Image: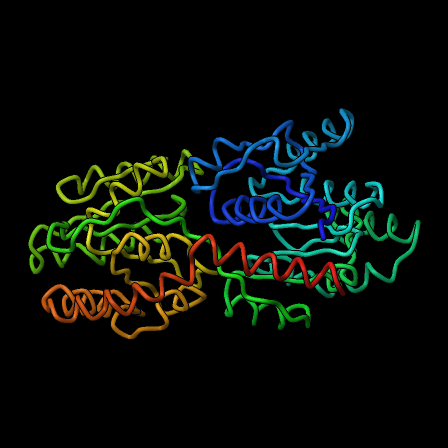
Length: 392
């Protein structure tokens, strides 16, 4: 039975993994339900999502509702006065306004972070970002009326709590999906609630290139951000150049900070003989590059999931990942490809590169794992969470 669903989504541009989850969740929901997106934007960047993530969204598949002009002006002011580029003030204000929407929707859905949407809801939590504020949120739930205003001006609560009128109790009442079993454990520890792991979707490649025709190249895909430890990665891989013929590295990612991107550009220029930087590639360009390489490498510690790793698997690469976070779930914690330090990373790589039989066995094992991260699997699992929330 078709339901009326309200997606509450501040960011409607293709940026990273969170937005990929939103795009595919939206496509899944539109196939079965009547969907409205509540957002600050005048429109959802459908063409950008389709190009970046491989979705086939159409603007006519869903409606778009946005706050009025004065609220949009207030949102801009909040963002202007908060120097943090990752500020949650606009998202919190949108949540407050979502609670004022007509009670004609059957379910509200948020795909960015912990959410208090007023209606019975589904939240997809990529990481419990607000866990450090749980005690303060517990106290905020007990305040009423002017008590909240006094607590704000006395510094007892954060401004975003008041801006979003955020209730930990209502947030806990949502059906919760998350990107990995590891993140689910963090959510349980932070809020005492259970979650359903729904692995993010990694769009498949159009074509595969035979292994023997691929280069001894390594892919590093993800946001160009300090958390990805790109400097560490170059230092870790460089000694292998004397051991592995034609070893080279391709760094692919979205530019977030021009300043940090400039630092990485300078670093790559210093290693131009074996490192290439590919900023802001389209989906097709990334796939064409990926299927030409044999290996992938991911250096972030405690990555919540790592959709780039799943994308490398789907392209037929063997990825090496840090032994932490949810990333190890993608490679099923296979000891042949997980590492804890630079020495272990180099040892794992040399063992695989020098052993064709091991390469073949590993590719077969990891290839079966890649099937868990298809868009079709994600949409099916996500809709099951939505259905369970609609029927409770």
